[in-house]
Image (cartoon, rainbow over the protein chains, first blue to last red):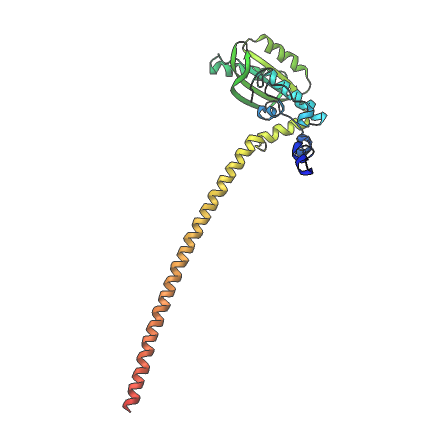
Length: 88
Length: 179
C-alpha cells in the first residue's frame, strides 16, 4: 500500500507554489519602451521572433500594447527579424 | 511645438563622405521645414536582421526634433521615398515619457550607458580606495618605525639609567663599606 509520503512524489511538487507574474513596466516604473533598444525587446519575443502573449510575459494590457508597437517598429527598421529560427 | 523622432537607414555601399552628405542633406531639409533639431544620434553601421534591397547592413541615423506641426512629415517622407539611397525610414511622435527617456539616455542615466558609468565609477572608487589604503599603510609603517625608534630610544635611555643607577649604589656601597 502506498503511504501518504509516497503519493506526495507522484505529483509535480512545483505545482501550486508558482510565483505570481507581474508587469515589469508597472513594477519598475518604465513609461516608455524604446524601439531602438533591441536587447530589451528580445525579452518579449520567442525563438522564432514572435511576440510573446501576455499570458507568458505577464505584462499589463497597456504596456503589452506599447511593447508590441515598439517591436513592430524595430522590425520595420531591420533591427529585429519578422521571421527566423533560433533567434536566441 | 511637438517632438518627433526620425530614423532612417542609408545604403552602406556609398562612400563615407557620400553617406554623410546624404544625412546632412536631410537634416538641412528638416531645418528648412521649420524643425528644430534637438539631437542627432548616429548609430552607425549595423547588421540588419533581414536583407533589405539585397543589403545585409545599413547606416542608421536617428534624429530627434521639434516642429510646430506635422506638415513636414509628408514632405520629408516623400523625399525619402524618392531617394534610392534611403533603405528605410520611420517618423514617430514622441510623448512626454519618450522625451524624458531620450534626455535621460543622453545624460547617461539609462541602460548600457548607466552600467558603463557605474562600472567606471566603481573602478575609480576602487582606485581611490587602493590609494587610500596604500597611504594608510605607508603612514602605519612610518608610525611603526617612529614608535620602534621611540621604543629603542626609551630602552636605550632606560638601559643608560639602569647602568647609572647600578653604578651609583655600587659606588655608595663601596663608600659605605669603606667608611
